[in-house]
Length: 365
Image 1 (tube, rainbow, N blue to C red):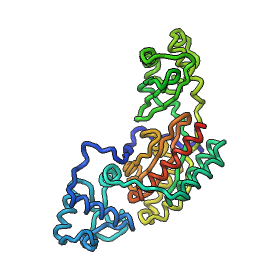
Image 2: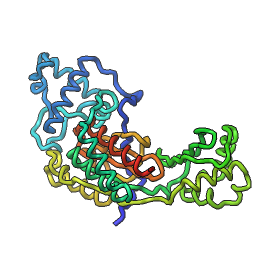
Image 3: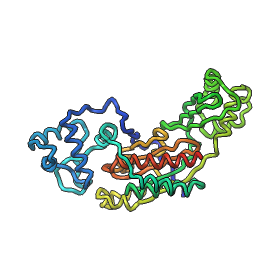
Image 4: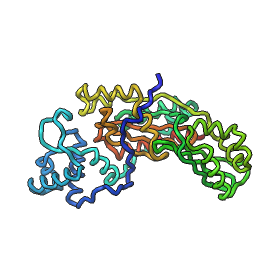
């Protein structure tokens, strides 16, 4: 069964990129930063809320209980921490946990990059190369590798963007006979094509082609743009436009599409946050339908792993984060890892980057 499309009205988080700060990020003092980092580390171990007493036992935080409580209150006022509802976490009163805002801040500002062991890199390269001749098999193997090495849930898909609205179009020269066509879609997504031009075109000519194509194609769907570039006689009257249209048609494959491919569902069920069946049921239901993961996975910056923290409160997925890698190149799709908010982001991002980059290389070969 093909996964259903997520309703446009459902609010979903925007992927956070490590090192990409926002104007709203708070400026923490060294004391606040140390306390916040230590609380994150303690909470990640066992999912339990962290009290000032538990923090005070850490050797690097030799402060009075009153001082720690004051710092925790400050971090809570900044919306980086929150007091969990008991039934949500299953642990009796007291203590704080990082909020969704806190986890986003941690990923953007405080996350240290992780290096993967050489044996993982070798295993990824070997196993993916064995599936390189079949797109769906390649993506299924990618989801298995992500699940195996992250101990979370691995995801992969090739998603058709043919019905998405075209909202912007840019042409950039890459050389005398090459150009990059960037098609901007609704929802902050894009489709990029490297064009091999039959005749050299200067930047001025490419700018004029961009103007003509924007006038003719914006507002329609991506599918309509592809069809018009291939066969519209009105476009063919302009010699420079004709050169670009022919190059686009030659490099623009028919869309490849797969259902949402998953591996490692049992890893989610083993997490203490989802020991309660009532918390796990919405996750399994969303995975079965593919919503909202399909749209969220292909959002963000192509060729880079991003983190969607607290996927959607409306779909009862606020306790989950998605690390996804939108694939650049001819096949529109993504690979990713789904896990609890307290997942090991540094290692997971490194793993998703590795698998995503290798899949993209094999798809473009």
